[in-house]
Image (cartoon, rainbow, N blue to C red):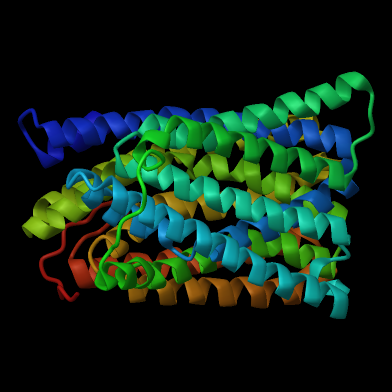
Length: 450
């Protein structure tokens, strides 16, 4: 599959393409391992915590994932651009200056968010579905830790250290969490919500420490040097639109769990969280395809090669849909048995899982629409499509969750995904003249706007 994508870009051996495919394969293997370990860690947590407390844990983690985006402020995107430039120009002092700046920004934004969140907890406890002070404090600390981990990984990626960048967050962090939960189980200790968040945070801290040790040669041995004011402004400006899109995407992904904590029960939130994790397997093939195709889209667009863009869209969409259908078939036939592994209380979430699978299938069938927009200067269209998807999700959640619980949440979430992807698909088709769906129908004319 990835070899086929490579041939679309170049018919001859090329060092850049080889690096791209090598990095894509490394990311693919580590992402697969991380997905498997994530499912195992959540399986263990559901067994140790029970459905009600696991639901509280899922709500806390949903807030964490949104906060991580706000903590990073899009600086990971800036690091990928400027970090690569500074490394190429052999300016370790500039790398150190950027690392120091990012550290200050993460700690500052984390502190501000802590004040806001704890203040809201004091004034309106219902906003956080009754999470304790300790659980919220641990969630904020976890978000800051994951933000630092993500930014440190971005520095490694800027230096083309794909393995180091990916393995610490996707594999080591999950493996450490699994090991710590197994130790607690072996000792016969009870596991509370706060203890589970503490183990999750400790695992993230350990992964961050290992990553910093393995990449310390990038910036630790030199003092920071002055960086131009223009560069500093660009560090902040470059990711503003993308960070807004990323934040909205995280809200879409996490809002159902959070809203179920408001309109239903923590047990319902737990059921939805497990079903959502399993349904993500259907979209995993698309994520894998995006690893290889994303940079290729930018390259072909700059070259003005619409025909190769169409071929790339066709091949990647067909591959993603084939993998999605295979995963969906397994979940359709064995979904109840898989859910039972998490506990008997989760089996009733099978209809929720199937509805979420429908949304994931549409996501896969429309292809790499998000990448086609973000890599071709269509970020505003991407932003407004996400806003529309979020609006549909929230509106249906408010209408359906009080009566139908996680089933209503699944309908809302899938509807939001379908709206979001349909708008993006139409935008790519009309603006770029590219059909990103698995059908890949040729277009004779299109409006090419940027």
